[in-house]
Length: 126
Image 1: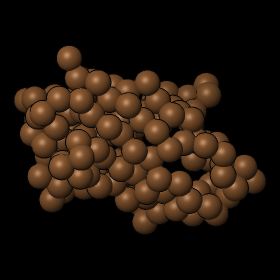
Image 2 (image 1 turned 90 degrees about the horizontal axis):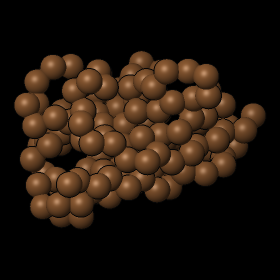
Image 3 (image 1 turned 180 degrees about the vertical axis):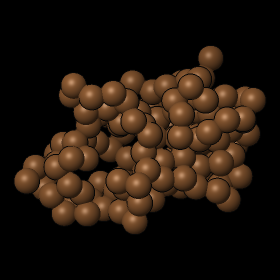
C-alpha cells in the first residue's frame, strides 16, 4: 500500500511563497509520474502540476504557470511544489497524487491517478 503525506501548507500573504512537500512510502517512487491537485471550498478538484517519472517532463495549469515549480527527489522519495507570487485564489487544499502504473492518458485528468494524500491547506490572505 502506497502512502503519500503532504506538508508545508499554511497561511501566507498575497505575493508570498510556500513550498509543499509530498513524502511517499515504498521503494518504487521513481517509477511513477506524480502530480498536485487542489480543491477550494465549493469547487471541484482541479489540476495544478505534474511531473513525469523521469522528471524530464513537467505540466502546469495555466493559472499557475510561471509561478509554481514542481520537482522531485527520488533519493528522498519526495516531490515538491514551490509556489511563488501567491494569490488569494490559490487558497485551497492541495493534494499529492501518484499516476497510475499504466502511465497513459492525460496528466491533467484526476482519473489517471490512483493514490492520493490527505491534503494540506494553503490559505493566501489579501
